[in-house]
Length: 148
Image (tube, rainbow, N blue to C red; front, side, top):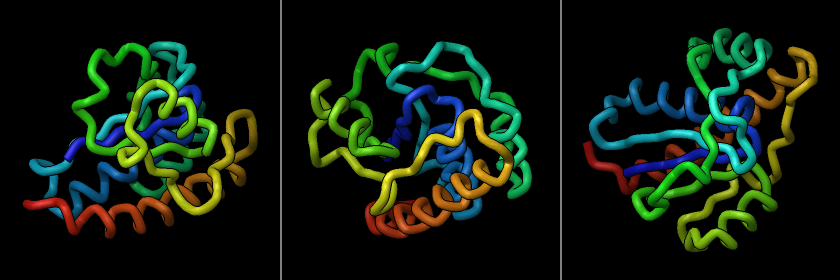
């Protein structure tokens, strides 16, 4: 299964989601069955996550310090992914307009995840914790389709 996490700039929310989801994959021995990446709809290629994003992930044993932003437009083949997980309804709309089938689009959680860029550590922690809770739900739902 191939999953892509999408936000706007690919420096805060989607890299945090990718890192935390990868940790879930590894802790459950699913590295051979699940592949995940993250991209941004308006990412500046190569930009690094802000230190607050790196710090709050480090607090839970997730290292995103080596992440470099990737723009979704650099992907040649969207069909290779099984699921596109977005942070906002607007991002889902943009992907739908770009040709991603609706049955491959998932909003991470029941409420949108606000971009913490430019905020303090507490805001980043709240964002991280919201993403973590919703990733746990997503992971449980996806486990039904994943084979070791």
